[in-house]
Image (cartoon, rainbow over all chains, first blue to last red):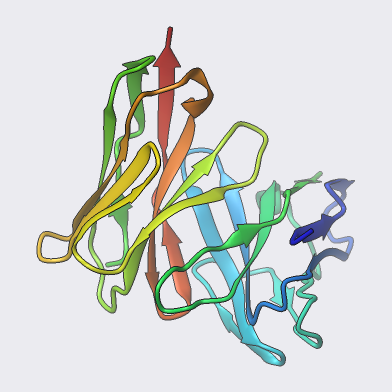
Length: 114
Length: 108
């Protein structure tokens, strides 16, 4: 089954404790992206990756890091989480075709930073 | 700017037709997508317009006018299960910008 998986689904942590949210896709997509979703703001892009070893900042990259060492994996790293990073996080992947631009989203990770 | 504007809420009755509008202000615009998100779920793709005109997919249609920087999502024969949030999404190159979303309430 074609899918995007994220782990963990729920995480409660404390300020300053480094954490990683994993994202993996099995569709051989080149493009992957991380978003955060906050009430009333829709989804905001944090980072995206066009292919292995190629990443770039989205609209809200401060406080986050990413890496893309393999095509299928795109982890999101919070080196020193702060309470304003409490949010719902989504990973997505797409194989842009020039005709459609379908992004496939993971189930989401709800992060609470105390 | 790269913002998108869409209404925050729309209410309609079962069986009706509803239109959710989206205006965008952006440079480097490539296309407009629409996504649906139910409470507690992930966004799922509905439709995409790169060219002006209407795209139809079952009960859902999407329209784009590049000259007016305007698009809409049309939902026909509304069902209770269509109660969800709907996002217009601007795509251009590799950056993706989501609108804040329109919450659709379908009443019996």
